[in-house]
Each structure stands twice: as C-alpha cells, then as structure tokens.
Image 1: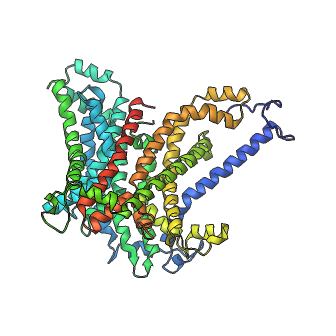
Image 2: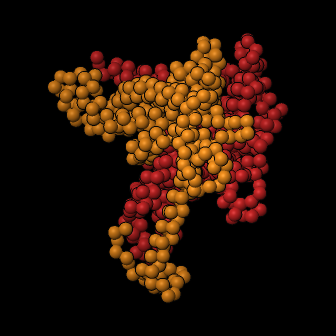
Length: 294
Length: 290
C-alpha cells in the first residue's frame, strides 16, 4: 500500500486497545494477513503437491504417509504400457480437444463479429439462448445424443465426442470472442471500407489480425474445457475413443486404487492444462463469466 | 454482398451448431420423457405414456426425492461456503504486492484441474490408511482419527462438499478480486479518514459496491453446483448408498446403468426448470455489464 500510515485518532473506534500505537496495530494486521494468505496457498496446493509426490513413489511408498522417499520414474513408463496404454487416451484427448477448437473458433468468430458490429433482428434473444445452452445440464443433452449415436454408429468414436463437445464450447467461444471484438475500435474498418474494401476483406485483413491474440486466448480456453470434459466421454466412449479423464478409471486394481499410477496419469492430465491456464490467466475470469465480469 | 444479408449469414453456422447441439437435444429429451423409453427394448422410444414418468418420479420414487434433497443441501452449502471463503480470500489478496499477486497466479491451478481429477485427488486425501487430510483431521479432532470418511454417509457428503469448495474457491476469488478493483479507492479512504472501522468500511462501502459481482458469482456457482456430476462420480459414485447422489448422478444412473432413458429424461427436464430461472437472472447481469 502506498498510503502513508495515518496516525490513528485516539478518540475514534469503540474500543481502542490501549498500549498499541496505530503503526503497531497495522503491523500486526499485516502479519495476520500474510499468515492467512500462506495458509490459503498451502491448502490450495496440498492436494496437487500430494499427487505430484505420489507419482514419483513406488507402489510400496505410496501406501504410506511418507514425505521423504527415493523417487522413481517407473510409474510414467507403466501407465503407457499394457494394459493401461495411456498413450491412446492422450492421443484421443488431444485430437478431440484440438478438432473441437478448430471447428468452434472460426464459427464463433464469424458470429461474434456480426453480433458485435451489426444490429440483428432478435439479437438479444439469440445471445440469451446461446448463453442459456451453457447452463443446460450436460446430462440432459447427452441422453438424446446417446440414442442417436447408437442408431447411426457414432458411439465410441472421436467424431461423436467432437460433435457434442461443440455444445459446451460454442457459447463460451462466441461470448468471449465477442468481448474481444467489442474492444477493437471501428475506425480502421470504416476507413478501409471507404477505400473500397468489401466487408469480408475487412474481416480478413483488419479484424482477424487485430483480434488474433483474443482468438488464441479463446482457443486455449476452449481447449482446456474440452480436455477436462468428463460426462460426455464417460457415456459415449468405452474403448476406442476413451479420453484421459475417463482413463483414470483404469487404475482401479483388484485390491483397490493404484495410487502411484493414478497420480502419474493425473500429472499427465493436469500439467499441460496448468501451462495453458497460466498463459491466459488474465482472461480466465472474463471467459468463465461470459463477460459478466471483466 | 450487402451487409444486411451478410450479417445473418455470419451468425448462421453458429446458430446451426447451437441448435443441433443444445436446442435439439432439449426438445428430443422432452419427447423422450413422455415415452416408455427403455434402451434395451426397440420401439419403446416411440411408445408414449403421457405424464407417467413424471408421476413416477414424484410419487413412487423415494430415490428421486433423495437426490433432490442431496442436490439442494449440496448447492446451498457449496454456494454459501465458496462465496464466503472466496470473498475473504479476495479481500486478503486484492491489495496486490508480490506475495498477493503470486498467490493470485497460483489460484489458476486448481481451476485448470479436471473436476474428475479433483474427485480422484480427494479420494486419495481421505483414504483411511494413507490419506493426508484424513491424518490431519484425525490429529486435529481425535474422534475422527479412526473413521473411514467415505464409508460414513455424513462424512462422505462433507468430503464431496469440501472437494467442490476447494475446486471453486480459486475461480470465485479471482472474479471477486476483479470486482473489488472496481470499487473506488477514494470512497474507502474517505470512510477510513472519517474513522470508520475496517468492518464498517467493508459493510457499508465495499459490500454494496460489490453487490452485482457478488450476485453474478452466486448465480454462476448455483448453476454449476446444481449440475455437479464429475467429482461425485469419481469421489463416491453417489455412495455410500445414495448419501451423495446428486440429481445429475441419479439421471446418469437411471439412464445409462438401468437403461431407463424415458424416465431419466423426465427427471432431467425437471432439472432444467430451475436452470431457466437462473439463466434469466444471469442474463440480466450480462447485459448490464457489471
């Protein structure tokens, strides 16, 4: 805080603690705050750190409350071997999330541009419906899709998963990109139009380059959502198109959970998302609240 | 091409996708909710029986009411706890500085974690033999030392709530920090100069200004709490018994495990109704741009 410490007026406050000057009080307050912050950080990180530790423990050490142990990289090899074959799930997750994003972002960008720059008939209604679809429970959406995919043979395929993932990604993408395009001033576009560019040329040559960082942010955001998606993959896949979060269920042995392997798989799921999330941390709030809070 | 045509063409693909992936399934789920709808009986998906599925849920299925109850308590508890704790943390972290900004950055991590993985990690933390939280609570509260958390209905419920609160505090905190940044500093300082105590400043200046953001946070969290599935599935799978069976889990179980698509579609639609109200409330804030 940059404000100079202000002498506490003795007469104010209902119950002035005798013997403590204002400066001392402030120092104690800061000390308590720092302590609370450190506790909060600790609580936030402990489950994550615990997984990181467990992933490097042997299958003997993992079943004890040990903080010190001889680390091993064996688990990361085991999860990729038979019968777990996490590599296949990693591949599925990557393809599904990537293709979902590759479809969603261009479609969302066109719509977002139109919503941002023009007045459409029924625009508010359309935007509310798009918003609402985000709030529909996934379990409602998936029932009809399961029946349909069963009939047309799309169960347990990556294509099927990509199609339903569009349902959860599109509303975020449209709202988020609209926010970014709203922030781009219109004068450059208008000048180019006066010089004879068509609207589509303007979109390609002016809007896209200027919105590029925003589009990348939205793409990363959608990638994380698609990557972590669980319910659709649980219901629609069972063997060939299983993604990483569902793959976690593999590590239930006959004697219970294989925690060292589960943890190694957990790291493989979360580490890439941590990197991506840190890249776009400034926009996380805006994205998740669909622009209600900036 | 004229802008007047183009502007509709530009939104067309998005509208088609939204219609196909969200509107159509909603309508189709509504249709299914009036059918016999057994997965293993061909033709039963077109066999209509009126409101019978709904009547069954309301009058013949204690398990349905159990999941309504579980979801309601779960939602109230997680929304209240997450909001209060996140508000406290936001107030602590908002002033900035190296430690506080660093903490804000770390807050991203739990939120980037797949909810399914959060469920797994909490099952790990509460393992009766080598769970860290289990050992911690056991040392802190001796009566809890020898209990198996996930085998006890109430404690399992508490763990599910804890996992959810743990996973959501970071995000809500970041939103509220954003909200706090827009509370004018001079109003707060003026109140401080007038001798208002920290609590008075918070209650009379900060909280009213934070109102709209707080509302957004509470609505958003309510929606996500009502929908909860992933952590529950991985953590307790609704158990022990049905102690932690949320509505989403109940729908999943009836539809996918028992193949009663028609019945589960009717329960699913019952779940859509509160969502419509919440979405309406939320949309008002989005268009107001708090």
